[in-house]
Length: 139
Image (cartoon, rainbow, N blue to C red; front, side, top):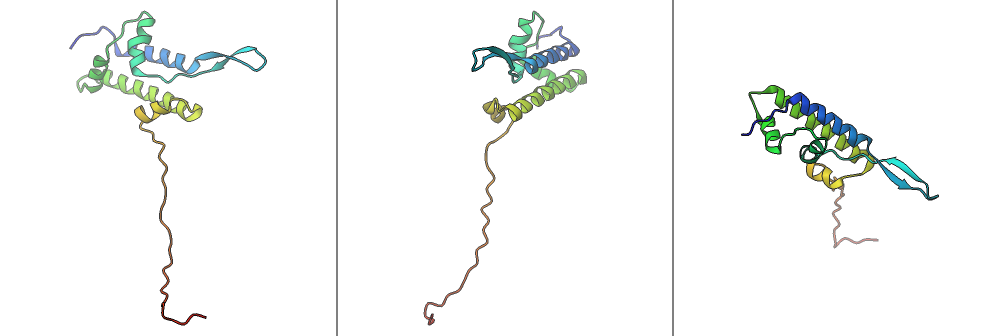
């Protein structure tokens, strides 16, 4: 297992910076009048992008995904484990809010958040059974 100099508190601080960028992201949008305006375009935060791309683009030291998951599975270092669990909780909370309120990332919601688009259908019907004598004289 490779050693990293990145402390859990530093990683969590970077995670909050990343979340802030995801939440406050804007994109340019042309209106019907031809005017270009900036509109909110929140991004779904992902651990992979955060570790492999976002942190290095900021010129900061990072950890690889295997180190991340080693921290998650460590029993002997509660600080690392707690940091990873807090980060995952934050990333998921933002992702769920974006999916729920903006309808973005439906495949992300299904694959990463365990959401489904199945409908619950109640097929219970009350049926009254009538006994009709076919030989009776009906009038």
